[in-house]
Image (cartoon, rainbow, N blue to C red; front, side, top):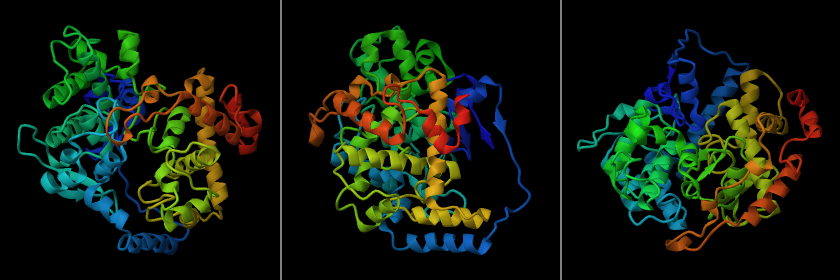
Length: 471
């Protein structure tokens, strides 16, 4: 059953579609799309087993992953700590977004880390169907922020957006925010980042007490963060209606000072992987058709010298053989961004989990994807042919945007991401507009798109067999 909750019914712009009580199609406001159509839920009941062209082949590939898990320490840690396990690594690198992306380090990172979660409020590990990793969290709290285990536990992005983004150090409060989002049907990234934006605006006097209905939005105030979230979900009061529009539309109502504090691309709030320390994230955030997204390409740290034979070997299967530092954004890194964008687009097309199927540290690599597709379908598809399918999806999304009036000017980062970070190991680090613009030139040429408009050319669409999309 896939359903929208009160947030979708109230047309909150960051509403999500929820299934299994704690799984979300979170980004881009899909819950509000359901709400706009008066559609509460879609329920499906199956009564037959799926058939495969080569059932033995499918079982063999499944067994490979189960065997790999026993020796893959990175995947074991994902199971033990969930994605929350990267909190301290991000902090160490200066890439944990703090106080609405003003800083890359949070003094209380350990208190909201995956390790702290596992030691305190974790009661069990949940799993998607038949997955050996079991990376999903079930948490319970007995204090004022009571959380039911069926509502799940926070992922890394949620810990960051409701934690370090808002300077909140209370892990139970972050878990409560996650539970409320799952219960009400909200995207945790969009909701948490919008509240962080509002806190900064209130702290700077850009939002008044009248506009917040008297709620004092302060850094580190967990109660205020949760109150703002409740108001957003139900469009309660002036503050609730403002936040329910998402930070970009809300800032447009307030004015230039509020807009200067946005971390949005194409109206979508940025996730918790910082372009300042992972340069290709800046490029993919800018050019991605549906806004800033950390799952639309592989991350820079997997393409550095020393990333490991496995990671570099699998990326070589995609033709990527020129590893670069995480802070590099030259030609080799642009190629890495585009090729792995096609790769992750293929993962979405095939409905494969990027934590199990990837090109770096996961259980299965690129060549295995072709094997499982062929075992399921009976096709004789090659990896290059499948990668072309990923490219078609990216191009079709871009054509849709072009039809709606988007062009190169919309492929840009907000001013906040060009400002130097404050404090910690990434103090003073920033991404310049010039390096993003130069990278965009390279990206458009490599993608076969028009450099002036940033949109696909007819020749490229013909090459992909989708020229009909221009009509």
